[in-house]
Length: 295
Image 1 (cartoon, rainbow, N blue to C red):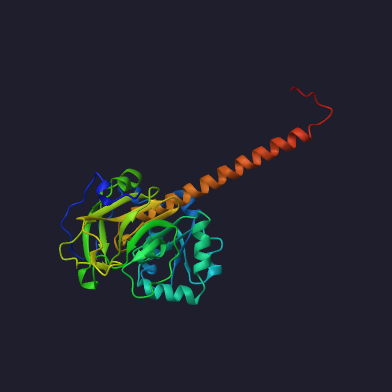
Image 2: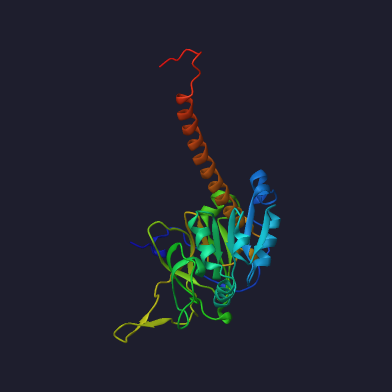
């Protein structure tokens, strides 16, 4: 069973505006602080093949996190988490193939390490993509959703709008809305039952009609609803169709870093439990014979 954007109870304002970069800080007091010891220790990779990786690196610096540019498989080693930025998805896929990155990227996602895809990065992480050129492009996968590669149209249809994000405000502070910058952006048509929808937005009135040809040769509209999903989370995967790195609102990056901390906490807890169990077993086998043993 899949979830549609109609499942959301909170709605964003319905009037998108032409793209104009936002520079309004969000998050109040916390936005002016680094994220503490865990942030200082974190090493976040940013796939630096093409696109807005410099902007993500700058956003990480603003919250006191070390970012590392990744262009080759071996550079993924030792990273705590990874951001796959926006850009031209076909070009990024060709470069990833050239550097033999896809197997390493799939292993990284499969290992449960936090991965965030923005715009083209969302396309990379989707299990299924439609609206592609003939032959399509290779995907990393892992995110149980269907994404439309150019849902919002061409570069001329790029826009900026307010998105309702109560979850982000609850976890990171600041306003219940964030600015969504959509540049030749994809959108999520449907998601699996394990995927949490974090934000949707109204479908712009000027979006060109997108159809596919059925097996019977009939033209069918791909998507006819008035709202569409633009941000989701599934376990260790975060995906946004828009570009938080192009605004001064650092909450999405801090939210992603919190996912990284959650991952470390779970790993540490699992290791501690395993160590405690092993120590208990070893202790029962190696009790000193000169001490009383109380059963």
